[in-house]
Structures are given as C-alpha cells and as structure tokens.
Length: 542
Image 1 (cartoon, rainbow, N blue to C red):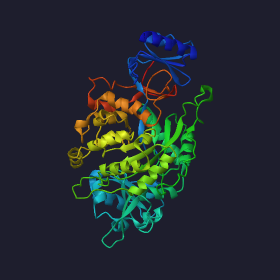
Image 2: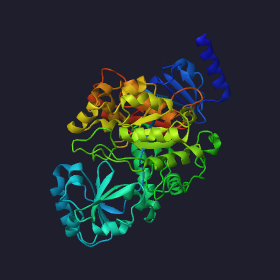
Image 3: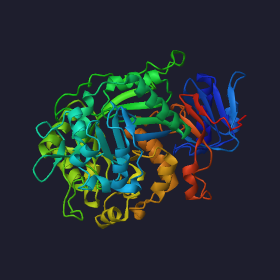
Image 4: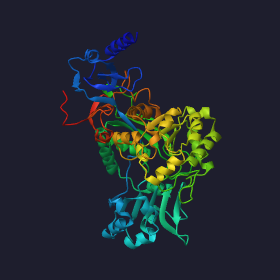
C-alpha cells in the first residue's frame, strides 16, 4: 500500500510540472519520517515535485531538464540558522587584538593608533579585560583622548568606552536607555563600563550606511551558502527593519531570511516603530515561478534581551556566582509583562534572550500574568540560548508552548563556567527533546553548522547533554522551520516543500567519519528555491 501511495504521488507530481532540475545517484537524508532516505530528487518551479529512487525520479526528466549526478554524495535539507546577527557595525578601525594578550595587548594597540581621526577605534576583548579595574574610562582617555574608543566583550553584552565614545553615543548617568546601565567608579562617576541596551540603543542615532550594509550582507551570505545554509532568522540589532530589507534586496543574495523585530531605544510595552511592515515580501520572487507562496523575505517575531550571559556574570541566576553575585535582569518584572503583553496583543511570536534561570522564572510569571499557558501555545514563544532552562522549569516551559533555540558554541565554556552549569543542571540540550520541548539550533557565533555539530555532539560544559548527529541535523532543519512557523514548506526534502538543499563535501552522518573532521565540511552545491545558489568550482559533477 505504501509503495502504491508513493507511485500515485510521483505520478501526480509529474502531471503537475515537468522537472527543471533532477539530482540523482546520491544519499539523500530527507528529514521526512514518511520517507527518511532516497537517492534522487526532482525540482520544478522552485519546489520539490518528487523524491525517490533514481529510476522513479529520472523518469520525470525531460529533454530540457538539468541533470546532476551526485556521485554518491550526501544531500540534506538546506540548513536554517535560527539565530544570526547579520547587521552593520560601527564606522571603525578594528584593532584585532589577540585576546590572549589581555589588557596589556589592548593598551599597546590603542597607544599605537593616531590620536586624531574620525573613525572609531574598536576591538573585541576577553572577559578578563572587561573586568579589569585598570581598564576604565580615565585610563582609556589617557591613551586616546580624542577618538571614540569602544572595546566590546566577546559575548556582546558589555563594553568599555572612553569619554569621546560616551559623548558620541549620547550616554551619561542622566541618560541611560531602558534595559541598560553604566558602571560607576568610587566617586559615583561613569567609569566607562556600558552594559546591555545602553550599548545597543544609541546606535539607532548613528547615520545609516546602506552601501556598507549591502556589502556586509553579501559577504556574510556568501559564506553561509558555501556551508549549505539556505535560510537564516536574523536579528539586526541597531538596523531598522525597512533599511535591512532594502539592503537585503539590493545585495542580490539568494539566501532566504526571516527578519525579526529587535526594538531599541524604546520602553517595553510601547508599539513597535515598524510593526506595520508586511509580514511577507515576495519582491524578489521570480514572476515566472509564481513563488509568492514561498517568499524570500519574511518579517515576524519580536526579540527582547532580558539579561546578559554567565561569562560576564550578567545572566540572572537563582544560585550565586563565585563572587557571590546573582547577575541582574535588564527589565523589571512589570516591564517584562508589558513587553510580552504588547507582543501577545499583536499575536506576534516573542523571542526572548533568557540566559539565567532566575530570568526564566520571571518570564514564566510574566507570561502567566498576561494569559493562560494554553493561550500562549499558538505563538510558540521562543527562548534564545536557554542556559537557564533548569530541570525544575522544563515542564512549565512545555505547558506554555516554549520553543528552545540553542547555540552549540555556547557549550564550549571555560572550566569554571562549565562547573557552574553542571552543578546546577543548567544549559540543557538532549533533556529538552526528552521533555517534549521543540529544539532548534542557531549559530550566534561561528557560522558553520558542521563546527556547531561537533560542539553539539561533544558539549564541553554539559557532556551528559550530547545529541547525536541526526538530532543535530533535524534541529538545524525541521526544528528551525518549526521555530519560525515554516514546518509545512521548509526543513524537509519532500513533495511540495521548498527546493532548498545542500550537497555536502563529506557524509556527516557516516559514523566512520571522525567527529573531529566535521568542521571541514562544506557544501559542493547549494540550491535555494530550485536554483543553484552556490557551486564549488572544484567539484566536477555531471
């Protein structure tokens, strides 16, 4: 009966559209429980019209069909990175300081720069530099009295600035954006430490640079396509949604993007500046393909950052850190309820940076204050990162319909942070699936899904939470599609789904492939909407 049904589907597909592209002689992991494996795929009008054996699918090819012999290569659904930050940085000179050099290396690099010039001086720094009391505003002013200096902790949740940067960003102890705060010295003056929304919100006042934004998008998406990524869910902090969409279109990238609202310079509960942007943009769809039902750009979801991370001890925790502190919330309990209430009223999915378990408790209480758990389930509220999804909170999170978007690189923590996670049962991965909570994966760091696969199957901070390779792949495809309400057209290689896929340079599901070899994986052929978006020039496919 199953074979008869498959034959009927193949026949119906053949009648619906002649194949534009046929891929055959491959090892296809479909992600489809009804048909987990195949050797060939037929594509027409940007969608999959057949999946099956070589004989079945090649029968659908016409004289005009393009045929590609996969030569036994592994094929997977296009990777959907559920958490990216493709956005515009400051007009700056990046010092590219070696973090291992600590404060001394940063001071030497700053002293070597001219003291006059319009461009900002920026660098990524380690947590040791961020915490160093000898790296504060007055010391930075002595090295660079005129040019703005902005040194960002590598987690992105804290930075050090000099007086010129404070002035350029419009920051003072009397003017601190909601959700952020400034460090103080012993006399009570601002000491150059800037945290959370105080470092992000001022960037909305900087002049737009559309040409540079287009360049950033083109460069970043080219890298992603070469890795087999076909969709991203992007939070462009500091870039207005209409500006980002315009730059994305102008870049010409074929990558699909979900644009997520990331409110800055606003108080929780206030209407969003771009809430009326259309949810689906089909402007780049090829009219001949009539692909409006599978738009290249979608707009949905509202992202709020509710705490920091354990690395700078900014995540709000129920258990004390080594220094006795518990971190802190970026917003009060009432403010969290207000921002959740605003999203709920618009029936928009909330995406919440929640790193600490105390933060998650605050979120669950705020959700309960806004609506009953059953009312939230249709919105699939997302917890980004979820280190604080402790064992005693799993069941309640499931009742609210929470989806966890985890980042495998976050599991490669230093020994002290790893010990803290293990001691308190934090940073779950495999336990999430066991609890029935949907799991998606996003990079939020190194973009390679194959490096992140290594991190997920060997999580240093929680080795007991390891996933297997197929679980990682499923979370990066079907899981990420579910996290953006796209599970009926993305995340599987099945009839009727979007023709987004990657032909890999090595078989990541082959148990004989050493785990250490996974990060070397690339895409030989990346297909988006049925068109070849990237092809390795060294791969001689026929």
